[in-house]
Image (cartoon, rainbow, N blue to C red):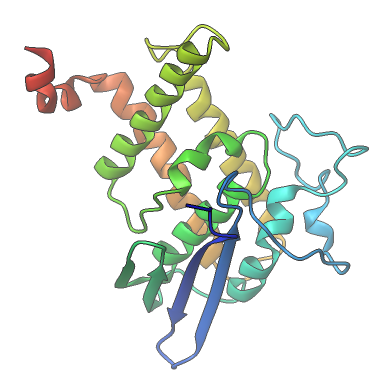
Length: 236
């Protein structure tokens, strides 16, 4: 069966005043790369050198604009005057199902921003793409942790299978990866401070940073023991 030309995920927000905001995230079904129209009127905050992430491997000569910032222009512009605490009806349409929830605006925007950031072409966030294929809005910490660890360990298995490099089956590189994610989230918040007059987008990024922070804390305190209890049938 031939692949569909695009993989579409739609976020629709209905605000208390009846106003609706809709965003269609269009992805290449094979690479999960974000497909977007080129814009000529990009704001200054999208320049790579504007609050560039300390761990960013990109060079201004090769990439004058931050790919993640460019990808998020419409989202940030739509919510720059919105408060995170405003309750909204959020509907997300994916290929397999539709999700609906009445929730604080930042909770819905967090899922949308995380989806766009992971598919924007950022060399660091690219590693999160495998989770995009089965996008799960409003995931709990436990759900996100399970999916994140499953993605990382499967990536290590595939490394070994393809002989690309020595797989990190002891998860020694996991903490470094999480720290990279936190660095990007914090730096991107700094990038947006001058743009966002209200906190919906900023708190959406805080949600993402909290996941990386809580995952680090969970692994340092409990390791994998808390999850291992579910795997007795495999381990006995």
